[in-house]
Image (tube, rainbow, N blue to C red; front, side, top):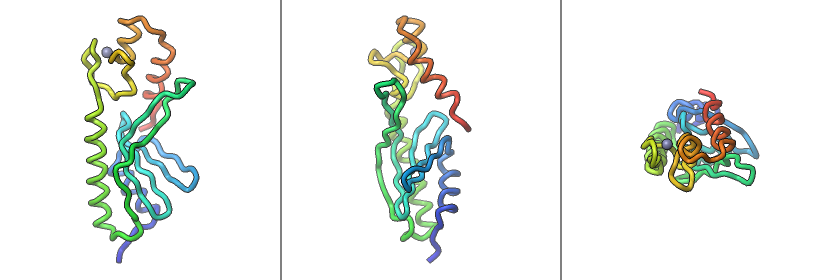
Length: 150
Ligand SMILES: [Zn+2]
């Protein structure tokens, strides 16, 4: 049976996911896809998990990523071709779920990810320019988005 090693699995997922950030911590490789983050894939020793990207603000108003897992596979037990098909399908599903969470700003009508809307359904630009809300949080969020590589 033709199976994966970690590097080739990572390389294939990088292509499917359009990876924008990647980190390795506590035996888990985390890859986040999308210019506006949409899907999170976590690879462990024998398990790969696909999750919908989700983020919320912590006490310091930093965005904390809280992935919402939809499926896990034992990637070492599944032949290469079958695993790739399954992962592509799981990633496409997670992406559609993420897009379904996006909302329209009630002021400018721009569709944005939920973490970029405030409690009054205003995007950060309208929160600042129309509602006159403090800009620190909004600008920090915006700059983080701009600084995302890829
Ligand atoms: Zn707006």
